Image (cartoon, rainbow, N blue to C red; front, top):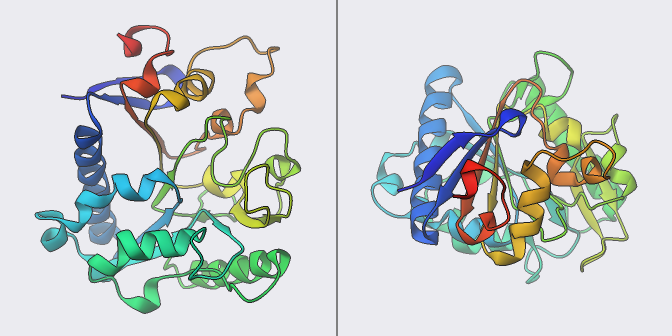
Length: 267
């Protein structure tokens, strides 16, 4: 059974005994949000990341979710993407398509991926333009407190260095305030060229979930969640900068990822 608690301003922290338990809880969470959003506004706009997150979403392809989720109302986006061909092994689109999207009846025209035949800068500009059109149509909702899109759910993985999306520690993309989608050509992990949602967009979402499992994530989880002194530099950790302005933040963690957490949540 998952341990759950609220960690002051860092949102709800859910700790799971196993990856299987984490996957089931994550599927329940996504399915419940989907149902609520479809009922409220007739659509569910979800932004995916890459990495191990997609595998942990796998239970959505199985019963009961495969039959009960209203897949026709889902609109798929990517929080970040590698600027490679959609058929390339590094493509987040390919990862999601192979392991999730091809296994459930999502409307193909509702899948919004980047243009993989242009430069990183052009891909970011085109992706932002496409999202702006969908905000105008209210396929994606709009924030109550800014002009940013308000995605129903933004799903984030967590790197051992504390990066989320393609927002890396000490990178200039972290302080981008005007663009919805930006690009980088110097990612510290390959491939170097990527597009990514900016922090204002991530923090405008109705719901943000950060998913992390394994001992290699323990230090990043500790630095992102635990109380730290304001002058120790941890505030610039990308994962710590995920602070929804008018939304809910939930952490889905396994035991190994929480081994360095302080306080009652680590017990």
